Image 1 (cartoon, rainbow, N blue to C red):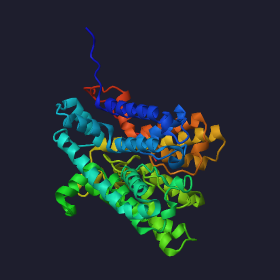
Image 2: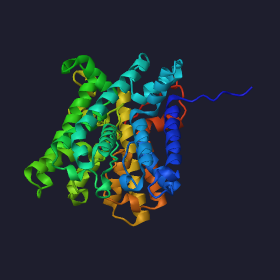
Image 3: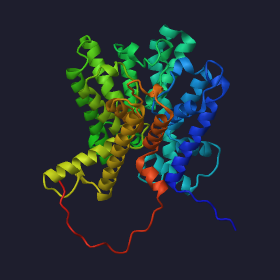
Image 4: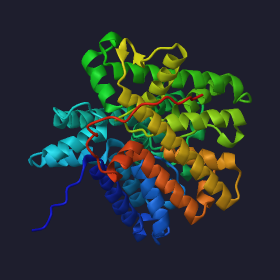
Length: 441
């Protein structure tokens, strides 16, 4: 009798993303996926597919000038799939087809969107689909008056749809290379409509599905929100406001005041996983680049379209540090105590991300003979699934690209998900080991 293969929730998640990446790579290798009719080499297709599914935005070819309309449509479909989550769409298709959703599927979906319980997960999937459609359609409507006068009706509509989905999914892919390769949104630096539309989509997509649900239920009554929602909104607001002020005072001094305000705010928002840029990042000072690397590593919030080590992880680590400084034994937010398991997981995530970010940057720097600062910027962008670049990714060798692919994949599916999928869970021992003190710090 054959033993039935049983996959855990984390294993289903990582395999789901892997399958979509491989399918996307094969489609991008087709002759009509590129403008020259030759098709992309598989390594280039794999990098692009991984970047799209992992909603990163790092590219080895300019999206507008290299990929055909079919290739661009494939990339957009991969972005939408990766942004919403592979399991979200799988559960939605299963539900719409009238098939029953198994308990294992519900459990895997719960882990995919970071929900607190399995109950109601199917209806929550419907909520995600509905809100995603609303936000992306609204973003498209806001961008139409910007793109149609510039490119005409048909192309203007396509550009609006593409950039709305890319912004909401925090992907950072753009089609502005039709005017100047790898230019991102620099042409719209002073355009209020484009700045507001893209920033709103990035923020809404990055705060997480559970946060939408909480806001929808309790409207603007902040006190009624779940503790996690309060932490996400507070941390996100601070991570936008403080860097924006720093960028305004320390960078972009050669711009008119209006452009300087928009550029400072946009770079602060986009650095936490969106990947668009409206300013020349190579002109930033060392302090400005370091701040951007830190923002990229933090990323968005749990259960969102964004990557990174997450806003809640940063908040837990900072709150734990403050509790130690004040000689308090517990980590807490808004009158609520944080479970010790969450503190341990946060410390583990930070350790993994820093080790991979620094290790990957050092290896790429050694292989390519490039300055470490530039390589660390690219690895932070990859593992944070951001997509911002100092321009070195297209020129990297195969080994360095493979490192970035692995970092993008790790950053999107989540560090703990990868570890839990690789390491089988074992029951806790019936007794604890003897305790002994160790001095730290």
